[in-house]
Length: 146
Image (cartoon, rainbow, N blue to C red; front, top):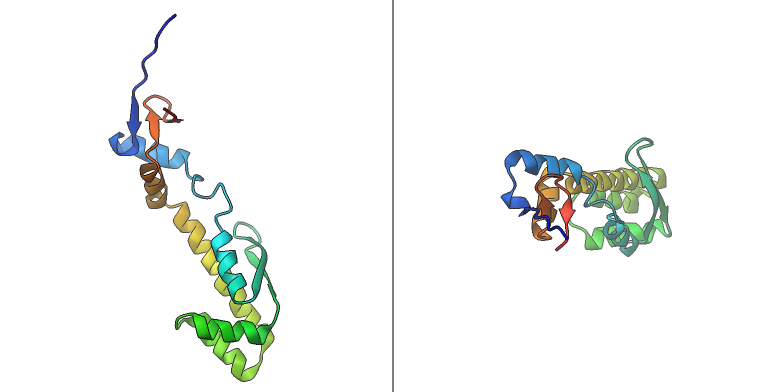
């Protein structure tokens, strides 16, 4: 029998160069699951079903709204002052469904993109690697389990 010793390092113990290599290697670590579920759940609370989205090629979000009046009312009552809240107020005053729907689509597409961009940022990836206390093989920079 032969024994082989491998040095393992926490993310913080890696050189700056290796930290950057590890971040590049694990760029998808925060988005390899249904990372959008919280946004979907928040939408459902105001009567919106997000059927799907594409932020890479087609750049769209598909929404189903059960009741526009109820959704607009819930947004105004429960969300802070922002553009979508103003759009909901305008809808309640004027009743223009295409404009309100367009504003909702833009709002959710922007939110999805922002979430994705944050989750794939160097900062977020490094935070995940730190908080999970992953160990890295010094030669391959692969995550090792103890």
